[in-house]
Image (cartoon, rainbow, N blue to C red; front, side):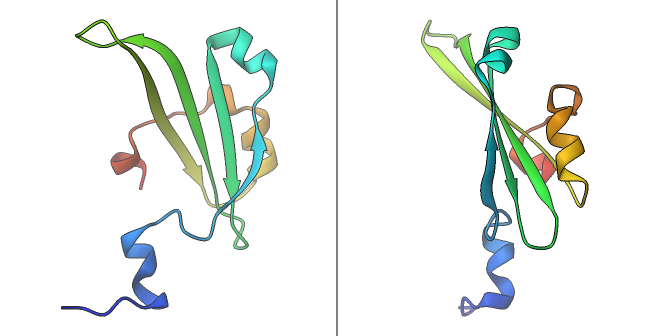
Length: 94
């Protein structure tokens, strides 16, 4: 069994080390029923979680849909234009 260490922790959770930096506004919610959460780390990398709520599943229950976008720099610009970014499933983005 491999030991868990600081060196390999990102293999376990690639979002480790990121902190919540911004949250979306009521205007974002009004425009598309979306919530946005922006995260950054000390290396300048970022990811934005887009949460869409209001989708019915096959059983008629309301579900929440989580999608992600990420980058290596220029977080302020990407946060500003977050609605235009390409979002995908966690396992595809990471």
